[in-house]
Amino acid sequence: QVQLVESGGGLVQAGGSLTLSCVASGMAFNRAAMGWFRQAPGKERAFVAAITGIFTSGTPVANSVRGRFTISRDNAKNTVYLQMDKLTPKDTAVYYCAGRGGDWPSPGSSSYDYWGGGTQVTVST
Image 1 (tube, helix red, strand yellow):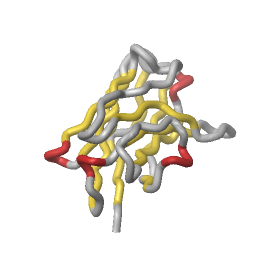
Image 2 (cartoon, rainbow, N blue to C red):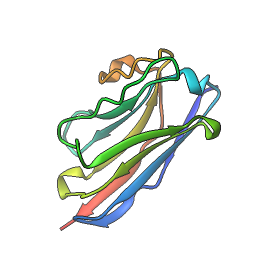
Image 3 (cartoon, rainbow, N blue to C red):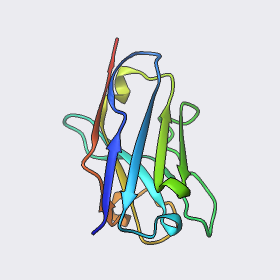
């Protein structure tokens, strides 16, 4: 059974930083593309960033977070990270980790097979 468990969310002031972590189990993690998505109140789930599995390379990032957010992974720890810098109130959302069987880092949520339960990020002014 595949499980994705996010952590690291919380309350932060605008301009601050947070690092989200997602630990995966029950899947071939190093081959899998992993992604981060977010959903703000009243809005649809939106792509944030993704990272390839070991057979390809690439880290697509949404325009809204480019230059501020960085995705990375540690295959030895079955963990994917999202480093978030220069946070603004518009970044407030529930952040979800997602994994897929293929190694291409798709920005489409329907491409992902597995989802975590989400972690809340709130950015205050």
